[in-house]
Amino acid sequence: MKRLGPRIEEKAARVALWTLTLITVGVLVFIIFFIMRRGLPALSLEFLTSNPSDMGKSGGIFSTVVGTVALSVLAILIAAPLGVGTAIYLTEYTWGGPVTRVIRFGAECLAGIPSIIFGLFGFILFVTKLKFGWSILSGGLTLAFMLLPTIIRTSEEAIKSVPPAYRNVSFSLGSTKWQTVTRVVLPSAMPGIITGIVLSVGRSIGETAATIFTAGSALRMPTSLFSSTRTMSVHFYILAREGISMPKAYGTAAILIIAILGINLLTYFLMNRFIKKYS
Amino acid sequence: MTKNAAIEVRGFSQYFGEVRKLNALDLDVLSNEILGIIGPARSGKSTFLCALNRLNDLVRGSRHEGTIRIDGRDIYDPGVDVVALRRRLGMVFATPVPLPRSIYENVAFGARMAGVRGRNGLDAIVRDSLEKGGLWEEVMDRLETSGLKLSGGQQQRLCIARILAVKPEFILLDEPTSGLDPISTMKIEESLRRLKKEYTIILVTNNTKQAARVADRTAFFLSGELVEIGPTAKIFTAPDDQRTDDYLRGRFG
Image (cartoon, rainbow over all chains, first blue to last red):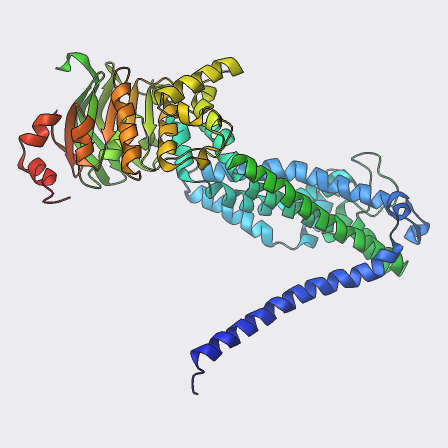
């Protein structure tokens, strides 16, 4: 086969790559458009602030919003310190020996486990064995375990990307290891760490399989950590699956998408300010 | 001569794993002198500085033989507080490394880590250190801007001011002007001559002329060994060892 001329080849590559990008963006836009077209008509302030009634056929989704936020906040409150702490230990306090590799390998395996398995694990351990029941506590703990590997991984990368010279400077100025980690390494690694945590927030908001097993699907307004609750994504699943109300289902989906977009935008904004402050 | 030796190095070897980077060094550093250390790349000059402030401890597989005494006390003695030791020896690196924070916070960093609190005390330390480092005039009206926004030469003087804020006794400089233009270099050399009155300075340099300009005594390192040490004038005009002569004449290295 004869080779095409370099100019044509260059042009073909450009067109091909452009097409691939267009398809990617196209799919994303199509999904958002699809959901929004069906979901936006259902949206109103009342939809957001009133509780569902009649199994979700009428009313709003307020209790599911509260449930989702409670679960995600609890999960992040548990997973972020654990994950960032583990990442600090692995990168700053070990020489990268066999133990480190085992921990890292374990975390990576954890990342590959399907969320429904986490749900089952959470159900057996927290809901039945520890008798937390279907509750925000069980769901939050399960989600936390699920998010850990991502947070460890992203935090580790962020910490590793801090120039080694910063550490040398800090130590040579008479800082302890802990001071070096908290005053020099972590501030520089913070944008990367926050990115990882935000990705996790997004994932925990959208998670369905793990929460339906552990937090249950009660529509009541949760009153404590031991209340069962229904997250927005579970609510969407049940509304659509049981054919209760497609308009309400799409409305819920639209809120989910808007929330995740909003969180991402807010993070970019905060991160830019943070980076400006430190560089 | 050993009477006012501030640092006594005896039979000191440094290993990283199986690699020996310093071999049985014997030398004294005298109080309030500028000791220049010259030698080709990988001759162990920087490793020697990092042995003095025990920064080598941070490298995996680091171990040593022999002793280094500061004021008569072995710095590798298990009872030594490494953090306190490092405060006594301020180090300036080859590449200026301002931390990603304001000029003020860069200078105040060491003092804060040492537990200095209160704006007034810190303000005084920052001003004093920047003045001694010869940078105050240039930055006094923009202390809150990022240290990264300064020019290379200013950054390096910031780094010098930063170690002065910790009130060290020794200043270790690892090729401090290697990336700087002649005027910045001159300013730093001026600062060093001034600082000599209060501090003992060890200056590692790849620029032999720099050693000739500012060092009181000069040591020549080669492959981790001390070839010779003596008054700078003697090293540059009548060295005892042929290898020193060869290096200074640019026959190798």
